[in-house]
Amino acid sequence: MALEMRDRCERCETAALPQDGPARICSYECTFCVPCGESLRDICPNCGGELVPRPRRERA
Image 1 (cartoon, rainbow, N blue to C red):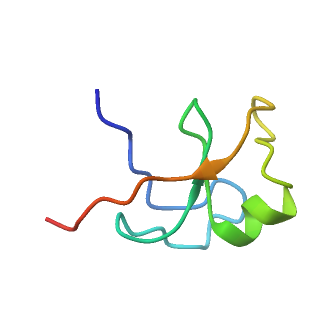
Image 2 (image 1 turned 45 degrees about the vertical axis):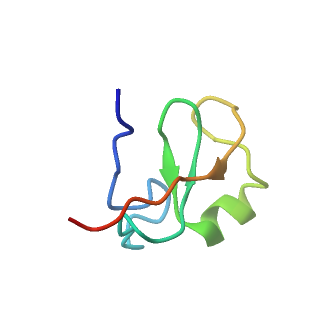
């Protein structure tokens, strides 16, 4: 099963998140831009899980 590669930050909703760009993601695929992830201290506000760097995918 592939990750859902969301294209917007769930917190600020203004940061575009390209598939080949940096982002933070939890095990439930909640997705945040790097600045929001850092301000959240890498803890997902939705589930309390750890936010880690999202794997990058080459653009098709």
